Length: 238
Image (cartoon, rainbow, N blue to C red; front, side, top):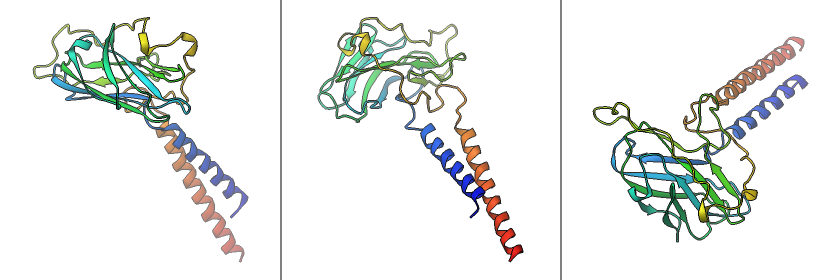
């Protein structure tokens, strides 16, 4: 194998590693709704908060609800052992004994009725035992399609008959500056997470992954071509 081919293969390995690093376990927080239809009754909203700390466990999640939903409209379904839900000024907080370090937190609530809007945005404040807070509160937009701290966004299908004209706003309510037990002093707020990309198509931005995959394919073809040419040269010279 020639030095050229070895160099190409080394680059190929590096690009493959970049692909793996560029597409981690999707968004750091996510939300799903079932049924995902505007105005649906008794809809289940599921949240997943990924563990971002390697030294502390998650102790609470504060969920800032979008317009059209209040804590009074929700019933706590399930979550980590020993956790409970309490209303908050602009949403609710689920908290309890700290989960194990590195363990994600899932919980579910049931809504009496979903708002008649095409999009739901849930801002999430995720608190750890060491006081660290991950603030997933940024809303993807045309100006910032891939924010560093993306809030979970859920798209809802239109109800029978379509959305009413001049319907309610799709944006979230402004987050309260006082987050109670789910918050901590501003000095404990962490720096940006390692991977700022949003996932599941929620951010509407162009992901670099297709270009990386294309680069891998091109390099693989180059490496294969170089190998074939090298083999032919050896056969001709022998």
